[in-house]
Length: 154
Image (tube, rainbow, N blue to C red):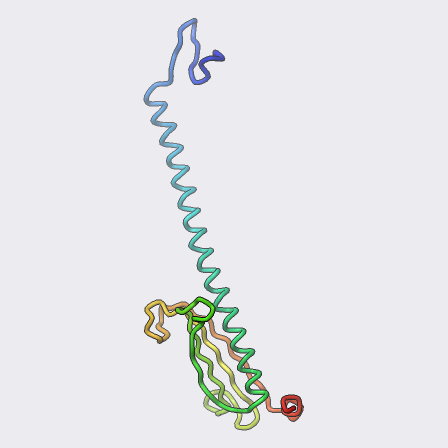
C-alpha cells in the first residue's frame, strides 16, 4: 500500500482502485449491520418505557395500599375510593382502592379486612379500567386487634 493512497493498492507500479462491486458489497454489509443495531436500540427503548411504567404503577399501588392499611387500623371502615395522580403530573394514571370486611370480599365481619388496590394507565381517558390497559394490583388483609386500636387512638 502506498502511504498517499490508503484505500488503493499498488500493483506493479500501477494504481488500482476498488471496483464498484466491492464498494456495493461493503456498503450492503454495513447497512445490514446498522439496521440490526437500530432495531435492537428501538426495542431496548420500548422495553425501558414499559419497565418505567410498571415501576411507576407498582410504586403508586404500594403507596396507596399502605395508606389504606393506615385507614383500617385507625378507623375500621369499609369503603371504595378512586382517583388519579394529576398532582404528580400523571393525570392518566388512576387508582381504585377497596376496603371490605364482608365475607364475599374475602374478609370476616369485624375481624378481618380485605384491602385491594389497583393502579392503571387510563390510555383512553374514560376513567374505566379496560382489559388492554396496563395495571398493577395489590391486595392484603388486616386483622382487627386490640393493640392496633390502642395504638391508633391518641
